[in-house]
Amino acid sequence: MLIIDAHLDLSMNALEWNRDLKRTAADIRARESNLTDKPDRGKGTVSLPELRKGKIGLVVATQIARFVAEDSTLPGWHSPEQAWAQTQGQLAWYKAMETEGEMVQITNTDQLEHHIQLWNSNTVPDENKPVGFILSLEGADSLVNLSYLEKAWQNGLRALGPAHYGPGRYAPGTGMEGPLTPAGVALLKKMEELNIILDITHLTDGAFMQAVDLFNGHIWASHHNCRALVPHQRQLTDEQIRILIERGSVIGGVLDTWMLMPGWILGKHNPKEEGITLNTLINHYDHICQIAGNSNHIAIGSDLDGMFGLEQSPCDINTIADIQQLKGLLAKRGYSQSDIENVFHGNWLRFLRNAWK
Image 1 (cartoon, rainbow, N blue to C red):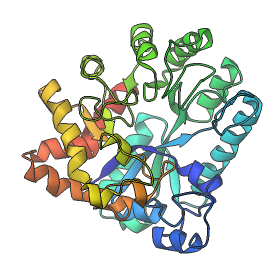
Image 2 (tube, rainbow, N blue to C red):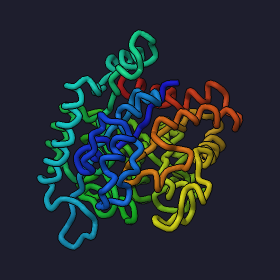
Image 3 (tube, one colour):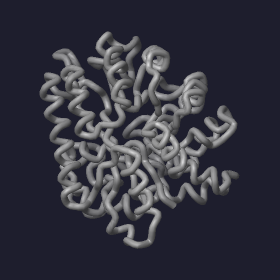
């Protein structure tokens, strides 16, 4: 069954992790076997062949580059202009993948429908189909000013999350408190004019409430789980989930184990020893479905290889292709065929068709 994954940091992995994503996950791991600069070296789960193997034919793919002040302990760039240049390098990688026939950018309904038809057909083997991508910006720091948002839209940007981790030029992110900055308020207005989807992922509670009040466009939560199950500011509260449901939003379940298990400590906890599996994610789906009364607001936003690998992924996953196991697991948990189709692709498709009509 076709899968849409609403959050993958492909270009970051290609440029900052120096991974040739045209290769299999096994090939990439072998190439990294002697590297120790990052804890997830040799443990990556995502590549273009693995996406095709898992019939993950459409993804929301990010650009990401943080600006950091002189007193910041977070990694990032020392000026917005440098951050912008990094995102343009990431864009160049996506364009190179298009030139090679590995990927194809999706920016409107006609392209979307043609691509879904291709992936649902048997005229071309899956291994020869391009992976479609919708361009998203995770954290808005790289937008030097709002004229850069217009440039980004012209380059195909269709979704944007104003915040990431720590302080932000437009909004504080995970680990912070407080509202949008004045620049962030202006950003939302411009996004609405351009019909860019607002990704509320990583916003503070205050900025979340402010954003859903100010922004009249389309909102999604690309990669989020439930605070009721894993207490942390990075997760969605039940109130926030209800607001998103009222707005017709879709929430992409994320597979980073620290968002699946309360109290996860990197380097101490092991996914297998802790019993964290794809079923753990379904617990979060169940919680959202109970609030919504249906399966119309849950989907996949895996964030796999988002600065972590096998050491921080469900233990029944070897590569991203194994997300296909959700079909059987959801069925065993009582989800109907239509529910499973909603999770795999139906909810994201409905959202996009409505946003781009």
